[in-house]
Amino acid sequence: MSDTLPHFEYIRGTLYNLTRAMLGEDAAEHGYRVAERLLNAGASWGLAAIGQIHDLAEDTDLSVEDVAHLVSSTSLNYMEQDYLYDEILKALDGVTRRDGEVYADFIERIRATSDLAVAIKLADLRDNLSRCSESLAKRYRKALERLEVFEPTRDEMREIR
Image (cartoon, rainbow, N blue to C red; front, top):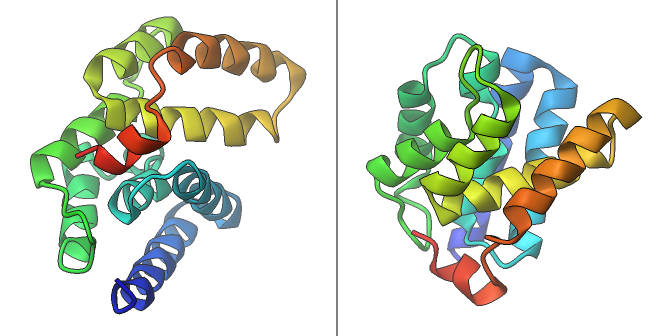
């Protein structure tokens, strides 16, 4: 495990720089904070890496498949818990809002996708709530209420695959 930490920090730095290059400093900081929230909740490093770049498919020209491949090819050799490409793809697809999708439907789709998607979106919402306008805060609080019922426990967070 001690050999894994430097690799994980390297991966986090790589993902941070990629996000900064594509979306700017604020987005890179947001992704990094989402990953921190996941780690503090007991998530594995693999889940944190997925959470760190969760916005790339939604906010760039990269597809969900491109981002899933990026996470899997960048991190699988170094993560304590290896995530399969299909699991990464499913979670990223779950937390990526589709064009024209009603927000309430988006939140319901996340809930139905997987515990992994729920964990990522909860960390995302909590970070967004700490930095948003009051009009967005109302929307985010409602989404939190809908998803928190399904929030994985600390032990479950370590088990998420």
